[in-house]
Image 1 (cartoon, rainbow, N blue to C red):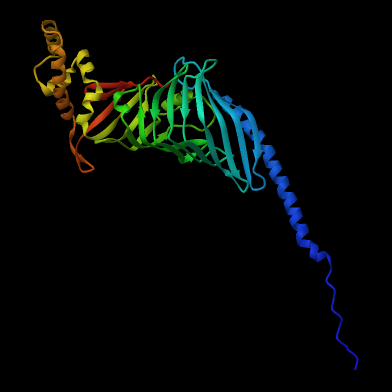
Image 2 (cartoon, rainbow, N blue to C red):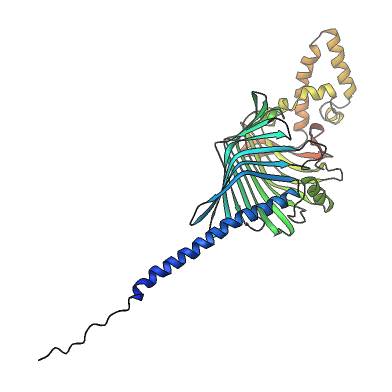
Length: 395
């Protein structure tokens, strides 16, 4: 009997090549998209540089390259620099910061997240002058969320940052830290309509020379603030922006701050603003544990030489006049050179008692503390009746 089974049907050969062909088309399309995006990097960067230049911030890149195919965009900038013009009040000379290399990375499928790494060192100098400062770090990086629109969140992190003053071949330490982090985000509003900015600054093992003796010893800081009064993020120099904030009654709210230096712990909260002269005004409510360790570092001897505040004497020694105290110091020095200085050192105990009497007893993290206001009046910083600092105008 003959075999009547049907012959097997042949499948069309084009089906075998369909998937490979589609993959090739997709790869070509993706490659075209990547190279188009890479070409747009230069266009966007130049547009951003032109916008920033209107604000007095002139950015430059000696050599720019794009890599990372196929899934990333890696933009490398060698010999980067930024010249800052009209960014501070007064007539300070413009300065230029130079950095060896910046590497910016973005995933091609998530271009609104940019990760950057910075290669140390960086130098800072007045325009046309040799470097006056050098900045080093073991690792520096940042992340920005929100680009290519105006950023919604920004973070900067530096490990082991160090700032030195440079004088020829001599480098003098100015600031050190184990770690510094700065985070910011838009909490309210929008980039184009009255944004409110929240920031967090964290410093671990920080120390600063040549500013105040209190800052020379290592300290940890955690400061959280909220800035209101911005109109928008349009490019403009900082003095102009500060005037804008002052005109609408904007301010910085210190939501929470904590500083620790050995046994000294200080927390503070309050609001600071600007007056018509560009100087800081406001008040912070502080609670300090270990305040007796602060008094010697505040320069009590110098304050005594300038005159003991009458308000302090009224609290510590009612009926005694400030001019009487200063006359007594002078008479003691004329009678026995150096005796007046000894008396001044002992007098600091009375000033300590006066400061303690300004506030009220408190407990901070299980330790005895004092709670009192820290006042800012026309740029001057007052711890009760004692002037402990002066901040220059911001515009």
